[in-house]
Amino acid sequence: MIERTIRIGEKGQITIPKAAREKWLIKPGDNVKMIIMPSGTITIEIIQKEEPEDRLLKFLDKMPGIDAGKAWKRIEKERDKER
Image 1 (cartoon, rainbow, N blue to C red):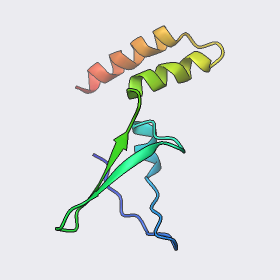
Image 2 (spheres, rainbow, N blue to C red; image 1 turned 180 degrees about the horizontal axis):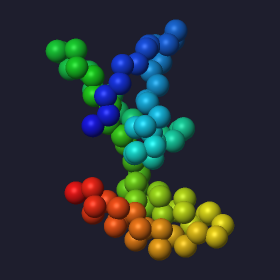
Image 3 (tube, rainbow, N blue to C red; image 1 turned 180 degrees about the vertical axis):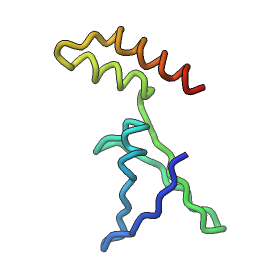
């Protein structure tokens, strides 16, 4: 979980913290859904057309000199260690 206090900008904008954007591969132009509950709780849901893993693989494929398959196996290995 990532929890941050953020300031509302002059025009009511909020900035999604960098750690969250990096973790969930959120980039400019992506859409999110904001849900405001009567209690005052605000939830922001990521609307993605593709899974984060697919976006990451596409990104890795564009990187010169990087084998996306090997990189993905390494990511999975690290993820397994965290569990």
